[in-house]
Image 1 (cartoon, each protein chain N blue to C red):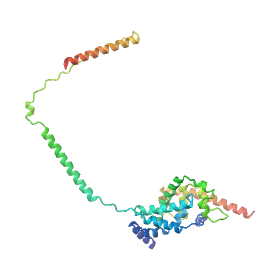
Image 2 (image 1 turned 90 degrees about the vertical axis):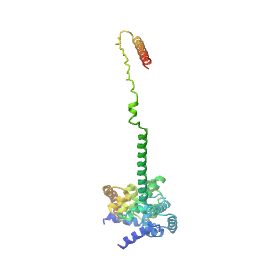
Image 3 (image 1 turned 30 degrees about the vertical axis):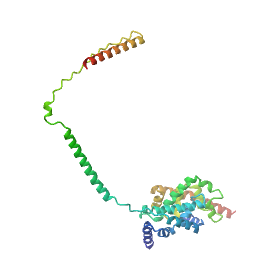
Image 4 (image 1 turned 180 degrees about the horizontal axis):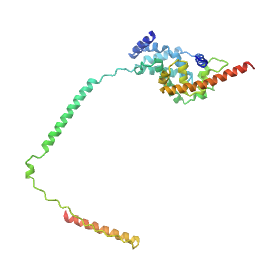
Length: 185
Length: 133
């Protein structure tokens, strides 16, 4: 409850032009946003630029934030729009990146025998479904918040989360089966 | 939480990244340089109220001016009696003579005949018009 009150106070202060209050406000979300943007950008520098643009836009248009939604939902909505715009400018297909050596996501994932599921997700899911899966399973957002962040209907969100789960479950089970068969020779 | 959800969460945390100091400074500098758009835009109520009054008064004044102008321009009640009665308008009656085309001649001949009839009719109409006016 204190966090919520504190967040509301920081939002008010930021709306009145306090950049310091805004910096405090977004402090808890910056790394999560950067991680998310990293999975949507063609380079680490692009992800950093997208984060900067997201925060600047959020600060500039803070008056349009509706307190009925979680602040993180609103931030992610801006981040998703920024990432989409940047992708259009770059005209780089992320599908091609997943196989390349310059892939920022691959660079930021520690080496492991098993492939990171988010790499599989990026390869096999559309941008929107990927974002929905991320918001659901990493950010713990509700279906309503996800649909608001993606500007999609609740039913669209539910159906596509189900599809995303099905696709990733197949990948996950395939990897698990491969590991088992390796273990048993 | 099911296995997949747990794995997705773990894998997300395996993505190593952090906001560098350089980026942090850059963001701070950018934020200092801008001002959030104000949610409270200047109220226009008083302005719109006075504007409403001004436009209403202008409209009423214009209406009064038009009515006054029309009343000044309109002829007085005596003028109708002094006005001379105009002569009744004679509408000329044009005698349209039509002939049934007999399609016995070749078409060219018939066309020429029709054109000649048309010319004659035109001339007759012209003569009637000249005679009347």
